[in-house]
Length: 152
Image (cartoon, rainbow, N blue to C red):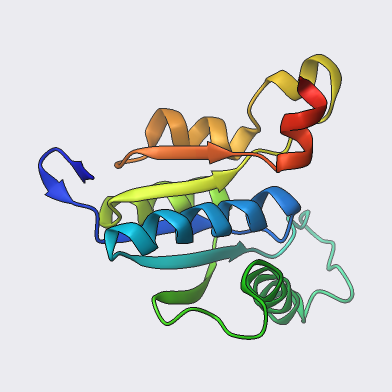
């Protein structure tokens, strides 16, 4: 498999700890194994917005919390032994903009879709929609197998 004649060597996966993002990791690894590609699991974090004159208490451990969520998602996807071709990276920034920028250096991106059931469940989430529209590489949007069976 290739993109515009070039082989797929790097698959970027947006990971937020949700079950769809864990499934995105699994799907990316399935592709990577057959393609001989590397998988980069990327988590994004940012401090909550603060209003002028207000300082929020308890915001000093956001990065550590995001790293724990990312590490747990990778462990859930692969067990105790992370495959040798999988790297993990945590980046400070809003997921939409950060992943779009990171897609410049990726051959493919895989993200999970977090539906909300009913009509809303038919729509893509804001991050996956933005990636489909603006990423600089092909994007695969996956959802959990359970959701696929419930929709049938």
